[in-house]
Image (cartoon, rainbow, N blue to C red; front, top):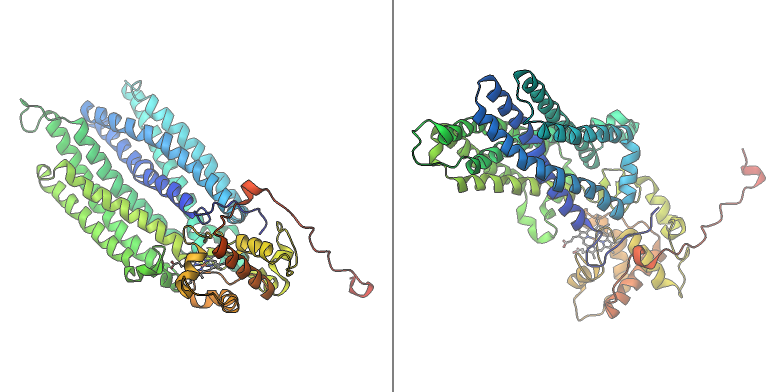
Length: 484
Ligand code: HEC
């Protein structure tokens, strides 16, 4: 309501863009930054303690890959999340920034240290050629691992908060926001799945850096190195899968029941009703596959071919991706649970807007009052403010398509019925927020939708049309008796 709407017709609120960038970021951050850095540091330490330069070499080579990926795609997608969310949901990011100001400030410091430590650790690896220097070098790795985990630990507070702010909704206190009810289970879940996937990554990468040549005896050279890695990493997999399972289950049980009802449509449309509970079964299967690989690694590492490791990796990616998608969807109609709806309307101002009118109090609106002459233009603004964060006109999750499914393609759509549906949509479709305007505005929205149906005209966002701002309504006149 307080920002002009950046809108791309066909894309519906840019959820897809935010989602793609954020998922890519998580898929790099969790296994590589959070999972692999501590494991590689541990390998470096072990090599130093047991005088195994081959393990040190291997850790260095794997770190090279992790270094390149995390400092390029990893860092860029991190910035990309800020960019995309501030474009498509500035009201939400604005609110979150106010709530989490010091948390995010700390996160920024931690992130800067993390980047500095990555550079320092990787670039000085070869120079640490005395025991003294090596010990110091290992400490850099330890600091890096802690910082990588801390950035995640701080951000997860925001993610948990958005779904279930808990006490904060009464107290508005920073620490209540940080320690929201979903925080601990989600942090534990992410930590262990990161370690689990990180271990499989190190294991997988090892196969590429240990080419088996003829002439080596069993138990020496690359084969021995491979065995060493597989045996250790399978331990990490087995221990962390237990953590993933326990925290994943705890997390699932801490999600508000009303939101779980949404999980049946979490995959974008209502057609996926039968997918209910899929998080649990996916979690179960993923754990099983990792357990299989982990046990196989413990036993005889040679039975597990390289390609077989792709299965747990893909399952892990699928689980994480599904987790993020379901988490984002289940939160609907909220962007911040019980506080702000996905379209930026605050819960507290809803009743006021419904009686006074949305356009009257929106910062960017062309008209303040709906008339016969400006009806369609008003409807367009109402659509932008109330629906465009989730729907496009004729594209992805388009309202035209939705109404066509309800009323039929070759029939006239009854405008009165549509207005009634819109004003009650949150009751039948609990993932949609209540309509935040008055009767006239609902009629204007219907007039706009009817026009789009007839013309199929595409709707440009504020980024291409600029903004037109009608003067805000005059403040109520002060009378002598109303003054304090
Ligand atoms: C929080 C996001 C969100 C907002 C805001 C939102 N919707 Fe929806 N709407 C959805 C989702 C998700 C669906 C279900 C899509 C599906 O099942 O294919 C939906 C479905 C619909 C349907 C079809 C309902 C049915 O029973 O099949 C209509 C019509 C609709 N929305 C209109 C609107 C209008 C008009 C607005 C603005 C006043 C609006 N929506 C605001 C998310 C939203």
